[in-house]
Length: 436
Figure 1 (cartoon, one colour):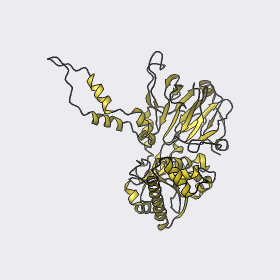
Figure 2 (cartoon, one colour):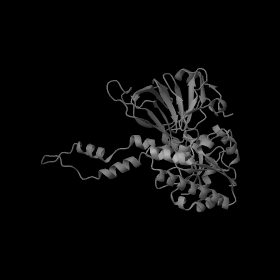
Figure 3 (spheres, rainbow, N blue to C red):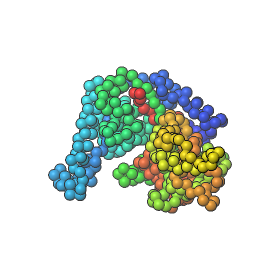
Figure 4 (tube, one colour):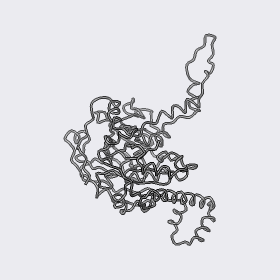
């Protein structure tokens, strides 16, 4: 049974940047760094058994939707509704061909291989497969990687040994695949597998978010698998409620906390289900004494890994916005007039957007308030920042029909009065393989 090392995580004294330097001394950008960073790294990694997790193609999804239709009947149904059937089958076969290539690459170096698709991997059988595998290999896009990462966790597998993960992008022409190996290895899969087999790689530890629900009875609501729209009941089996310290109990008006069994690799999102409805939230940053209140379109709390995804989409600026800002700069000329200064708006926007990203092993979280209302009394206090790096974040809901969503996949109800604490713990980091 998983038990956090401490009941109340105290923030270390010093700045966030000193915390960052302390974390990075364990980082993964060279081969020797891996032994210090994770609490449970592989003692002597030997690749003998590979578990390949494949994406669920659109054609396979349609087969699952209409299980009683024959192949010919399914084709007719898809064509009748206007689906480009030739392209659908082309992409399906493209992925399946690449999947077979990955399997053969591991077999060729003497590995035992098991293959499971995304639907199969979500079943309870995956816990046993996790114990069997030396390496988890998602094949597809970032969505498949995130699913595999959610299972490569001590919270899920009930194991003190981390299972490494490395991904292959099956279609780099249509998928960015930032979590996967570089696109070069899509064309040279055998080279990547040979390097991994020989130990010619670097460990990379990606920060993940631990989410705890605070309350008076230690219960947590059932979660929903957004991929299949089904209720999952894993959490009641995986964690036990814990009593809070007296200081935390007084601060957050709760007696107990319970850790959710899912760690977020990209982000945790909190907000109303209906996007047109305002989300009303209360935030406490780094256990400070200030209660920050906001009305907005939702809260996104991102890791460094997730900073290339939704985090950047929320905070990015466009070339047009740069041009509009430059036009209102107070530029005074001796002869009068305000000529437009020479500048490259596209380059400025690109540089700004690139600077939104931060390292995957950065121990800080970055929260972003989507479309924060900034009129009248909102936000409170008025200087509450819409984006900021934090060590921990407490969130209380004042919403009507809201959810807390982990990596866009697992959803919990998070309505008025619900409380959550988002933190980073080094032992929760995801162990991955880098071939850069």
